[in-house]
Image (cartoon, rainbow over all chains, first blue to last red; front, top):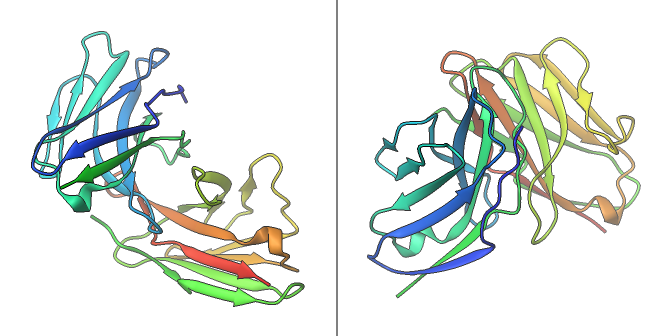
Length: 111
Length: 115
């Protein structure tokens, strides 16, 4: 699986949009971009994934650049409960392949 | 999404004893499950891949005789930490692959403390 690079930490004011970047310059054509988050002392939670088109669900939006070398996870209206470590992972979908977690971005949402 | 449970959520044991952790997929069948370990302030590290009805595949550096994995049914995988020592104290997390939608879901984790 391709490696990813994320900033170690970010702050965001409650109610504002949180934009979390991820670089994946060595991504292959058949690899998807996945985002998970881990709230303290819990298991990771799936957020969203995409191949090349922008994606949106009830939790977040995913913006993938045209060259697919980077992406941004957007939490449109961050709340205190969104404080967590966010992991960007690239992998081939459709197979039971292992997930390789990097160090992620620790997002702190503040009042 | 699909639900994965782990039991127990917390366990404290004495050094030298063995501890079994269960991972269950509650509303789907999982032919493949994964076991991760996470030390404080670190990321998740994959320990092994568990396939129903066959031997687990361990990552490099993980002792297969110390971390016994059994995946005897499509909804249950177990991890047994044998002869546990304080350095085995960690947060153990499993995940299960839902073949019906080709996605992976995580359990809530088990915190093991070895005294």
